[in-house]
Amino acid sequence: MTTKKTAINAYNKSWYDSFWKNYKIPKANFWPHWTIIKPLLKGESLEIGPGTKPKLPVKGNHFIEISFVAAEKLKDLGGRIYELDLADRFPFPGEKFNLICAFEVLEHIPNDVFVLREISRTLKKNGTCLMSFPLNMQFWNSYDKTVGHIRRYSPKEIEDIFNMCGLEIIRYASVNIPWPGKISGYLLSFVAKNFPFLFAKIAELLDVRRNSPLRMPISPINWDKKSYGELSDSTTGFFMLRKSKKLE
Image (cartoon, rainbow, N blue to C red):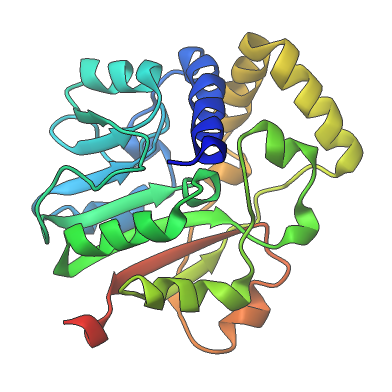
């Protein structure tokens, strides 16, 4: 791994060890993802990089996690934990999982294409991958850097990236999580860096509100060529994927 990639992974680990230390793990049905995930829980499931916000039920399921703090919390609840920085092949045989989830993860990873190919390799032919990540660089500011983002994806590029990695989009949803502007982003970054306990507790309190944007229903619709335009003003995209038939 290059020095730059090592530094990025070290920053993410340090930042999220501090954040997850002060954020309690809610039950899976706390999140709107649950209505989509529940009918897909057939066979073995994997979630990548959930921290202490797993969308899968923890007990008995597989989790890859870079944060030692989050890994220990998940382990205490019966999760099957693999502490990895995602620079190496997943420690699983091919076509192991019926369901793989990775929410708000790709934007943190230097080698995102490698990770997507590993997802494709370990996903069963009839399996499903659920994924979300930030979109559109017009929303980028200092707060992205503070929380460990190294990119936001363009809606025009995501289909090609997925296809290159052996995945294809089935359905998608625009998830408009409010994102701070430049000034508010700077202020949030200041609080996050200097008062991590306070920052985590404020985030936790905001998340538990019934009207929190993170708890609004997710309603995926079929993907087509018009979808690019519909995501052009979205802060976040949610995607349902399957293995590309071209590679079967």
